[in-house]
Amino acid sequence: MASSLNKMIIIVGFISLFHSAYSAAQHRSYLRITAQEFTGLPLDIVVQAVTSLFAVMWGVLNVAGNLREIPAGAELNATKWDTQRNLPSFYIFNHRGKALSSQYIPASSKAELENLE
Image: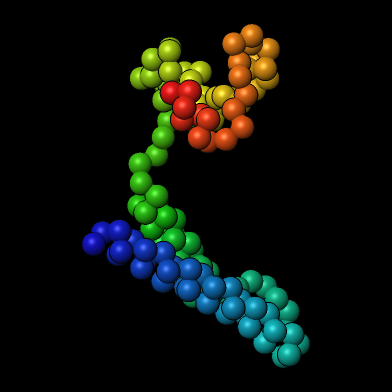
């Protein structure tokens, strides 16, 4: 429930932030039409933008979960030395070492492979 509430806060915050940006653009175009000088945005647009920005930040922090420590070594302290360099994605079993072996017999079909076992 808390996660869906935080997601709704993010959505409402983004909508409010876009609305304040649209209001600021409309205010600038109104000043151009009336030939007035731009001195700043009205207070209600600024308050809406800042409030919605903080709402989005608060919602994102609550949806994202726990933060990690900045030093990379903090996560590696709990792992053993033997598993630090264990990279199974780099294991290669089909290589030319088989062809260099004197006991290697290339199998041409799956049936021959089953007979070898």
